[in-house]
Amino acid sequence: MENDTAKTITIDGTTYIDFNRSGGPLIEIVTEPYFTNDDQVIEFLKELQRLVRWNDIGYADLEKGQMRVDVNLSVKPIGQKQLGVRNEVKNLNSFAAIRKAIAYEYQRHSEILAQ
Image (tube, rainbow, N blue to C red; front, side, top):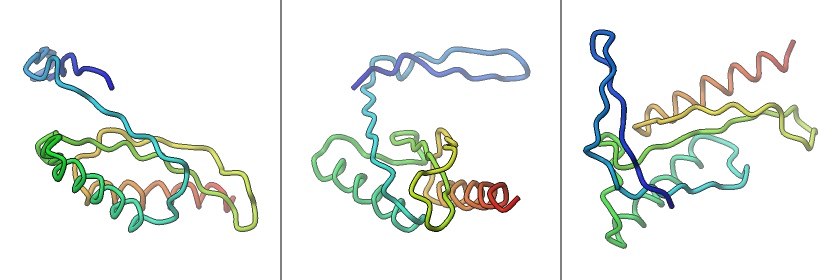
């Protein structure tokens, strides 16, 4: 657990610092490389969201910035035990964006492995 300090906003080339979220708690949850498709990832995140809401920890509304997701993805050829190079997509703010990121990175990694 850590504290949010601020966020930066760039408008017309000028960067501003917004301290409105200062002191807000951040909880990072890291899983093992367990998921094999986007449906599993989304179901896990929806369950996590339900737990946060049920336990009155927060609203965990992705679109309002109350929950953010970083997706780490790696692909391995069939039969290989070791995962390939990992790629991280940060700060996703909707289930649709998470699905798109997984699909894009899966395709990209698969094309690289096919070469």
